[in-house]
Image (cartoon, rainbow, N blue to C red; front, side, top):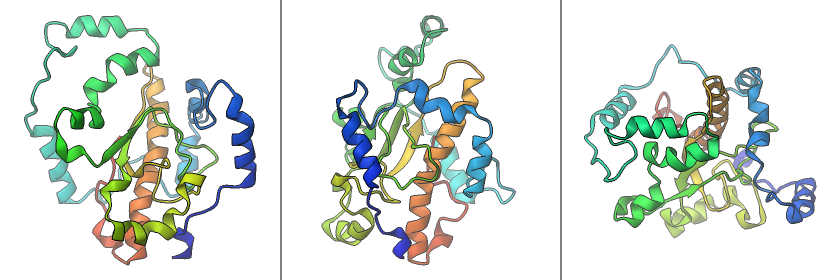
Length: 248
């Protein structure tokens, strides 16, 4: 159980944050090219494997419950948004306008259509999403590292602090630590996001999809690790074995 306790951020990291506080780019946010650099190496997949995370299908497959969940998500009818750039009569025009453009343009025009922002949906009345919170291109500084690379998804979703009762927060407290001061935890991504479960990465060009896959695999390894470690701590890990716990 002790290995799950929150960890203090090293003094070197704290000094680094202080030094970079006056730089153009915030200390918790790397430029897009820089944050993607480690994932360009195909060997990053092997690095994840050495940490117990595999980017391949398991021969055991997933539980029927998870298969049913995916099928339900796929087949459930969704209301078509009004004035969408994906409307049939303007879809081709939309694609032409983002063709050969940079990732920032794709994020602006396309990402909200594929992954509707949870917080905006809540603002418009989807109240069951009120306990979710998003991050956009923010470093997961409060997550205990898996490799020397820190995840910084283009978009991610997790739970707000108020998603938990006071009793639940008290039980989590030793494992969360002083999250405001930068303590790192298996259960947090940023200081305000608990148990992330969705990440998105945007890339331009077919070859770049492999890079996005490695980025998402890394981020989701940390996300799934938090759930697994929580269940393992109370000897209930069989309840999450072979189940889908996160999406990217």
